[in-house]
Length: 376
Ligand code: G3I
Image (cartoon, rainbow, N blue to C red; front, side):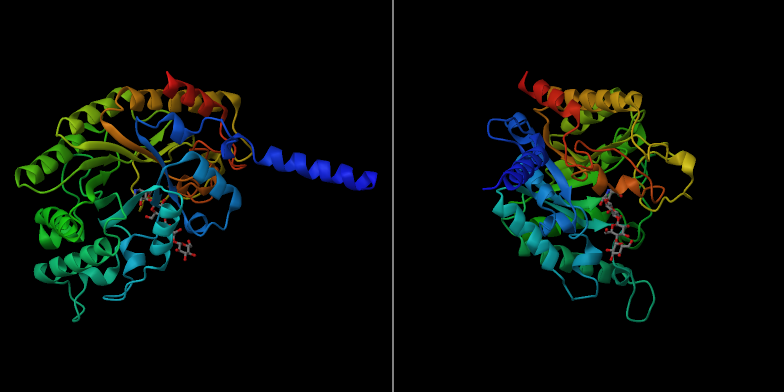
C-alpha cells in the first residue's frame, strides 16, 4: 500500500479512537451504570433522534453509560392521543423496543399532566367544558389503553406529574377543577388496574421546597391511607448552581422515604445560566425575552463556573450515594448538553451546560470523580 494511503488510514484510525473515547467506554473502563450498580439505576431522558438511533455517538454513549431510559416527550398524552380515540404509538413503541434491545429499565413519562395534555380532553362535543363523569372516563380510557399496551414492559409510570404548587396547594389544573382532588386517586387506581405489577409514581419539581414537600407528603399519605398502590415519589431535580440547598433537598429525600415509598431523582440537570425571574422550578409555561446578558457562556464556560458546576454535581451525587438505600434511580434530563431543554427555557436560544456529557459526547472531567466516589 503506497505511503500517502497508509498515512491517511492511520490518521482515520486515530481520529476514530479519539472520537470514541471514554464516554463510549472501552473494555474495563468504568461506566456510570457499572459504578452505581447495586446502589441505584442511572438513566437518561431520550429525544426522538436518540430513540430512533439517528445519532450514532449518542447511541453508543447511552448504551455504555445508562441502564434506565425515560422518553422526554413522546409518551405524553398530546402525542399518544392527539385526537379522541386516535392513539399514535409509533414513537412510544420504538422507545420501548430500544430499551428492550439494550436491556434497559423503562420509565413511562407521563400519564396525567396539566401541560402537553391534548385540549380535547377537557372540551365536550358542544364545545363546552366537559362534565366530571366524562373527564373521568377519558382519563380512565387514556391511562388504561396506554398502560395495558406496555403491560409487563414498563418498570414504572409517572402517573401524575406536577399537581402540587410550591406553597403546598393543589395546582388549579383542569383535572383538579373539573374532578377535584380525587383525580389523583383515580389515576393511580386506573393505572394499577391496567398493569398490577407496574410501579406507580408521583413526580414533581421544586420538591426541596418546604411548602411543596408538605403538600406532597399529605397527598401521598391520603393515597396510602385509602389503600391506593403508590410506589415512589419522583424529585425532578432541575437545579442551578445556587438553588436549592443540599440540606433542603436531603430533608425531602428523608421525609418522602419515611412514607415507605421509593425516592427517585427523575429529571436531573444543573443549569449554569442566570435565571431571569424569581421562579426557580420548572414551570414549562414560563418564558422570558432573549437578552445577551442572560446568555453569558455562548462561547464556552469559564474555569471558575466549570469548577462550580463540578462541585455542585459532586455534592449532589455524594448525597444520592449517602442515601442510596432510599434512592432507586437517578435520571439525567437529557444525554448531552446540546439536547437539554435548558437551552430553550425559560429563555429560548441560550447555551447551557447542565448535564454530564458535553456537546462532543465527552464525559466532563468531574464525572470520573463521581465514579470514584461510587467505588468508595
Ligand atoms: O414536536 C414539536 C415539533 O413538531 C415542532 O417542530 C417543534 C417546534 O418548536 O416543537 C416540538 O414540540 C416541542 C417538544 O418539546 C418536542 O421537542 C415543544 O415545542 C416543547 O415545548 C417541548 O418541550 C418539552 C417540555 O417538557 C414541554 O413541556 C421539553 O422537550 C421537555 O424536556 C420538557 O420536560 C418536562 C418534563 O416532561 C416534566 N418536568 C419538567 C420538564 C421540563 O419542562
